[in-house]
Amino acid sequence: MQNSEIILVGGAGKTGGRVASRLKERGIRSRFASRSSTRPFDWENRATWPAALEGATSAYVTFQPDLAVAWAAVAIGALAKTAVDCGLRHIVLLSGRGEDGAERSEEMLKAAGIGYTILRASWFCQNFSEGAFKGSIAAGELILPAGEVKEPFTDADDIADAAVTALLDQRHLGKIYELTGPSALTFRDAVSEIATATGRAIRYRQVSMEDFKGGLSSADLPTETIDLLEELFGKVLDGRNSRVMNGVAEILGRPPKNFSQYARETAETGIWGT
Picture 1 (tube, one colour):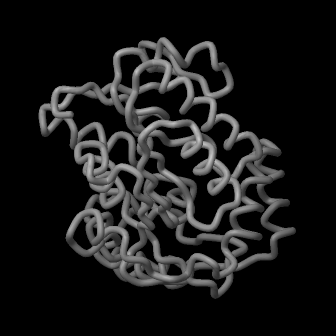
Picture 2 (cartoon, one colour):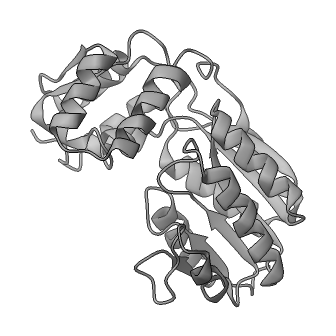
């Protein structure tokens, strides 16, 4: 496995870039497969898949925009079959906890006849610093339709470490790991942790789903994006995923990073302002 080329399907996102860096540090060849890569890969154009996968023996797969969308499972199944045809032996899939679409995608991957490892991750800590919430945190107020339901936010570094471990160690073939942080927090709690870490007055405000969607529409977000966020906040974030799981320790042999540590380390970069 050490001399194999690993393809990172989905580009240099929150976890893909981290996985690439870790593989490079180990002297292991990898390359991205995305719309902008040298050999383009487009989830909505299957004709691009064989050339993008050619030459790889394993893959780390992240699906855009999210496995919760209706067509994700079919796409994952088709990709896995293409991977088999291209000679790949192993796919590590970044999945989501408690999402019906994610579970369907996992089943399609299993049915394709390729070696697999599934990483079911909770919401990323990095959504507050590298994703949709970054601007709101920097501006001093995060407005969401999330109430007092708790989420065990996972650090993207832990996910990347787990992905690399799964890619390089065949003992993880056929395994499913549920990756969470060591404790569950509400979104209000998370914002409070960030405020403490930055020394700034940052607040959380809960709004109704109707008002939230109205704000998204006013911002001209695509209907598909609005529907996805409604699915995540209106259905998935209902407490089904509040339980802390032991997946990080199981695959890495160490405890996961807690949200307070993430907040302190990120605040030190100045990304949220001072």
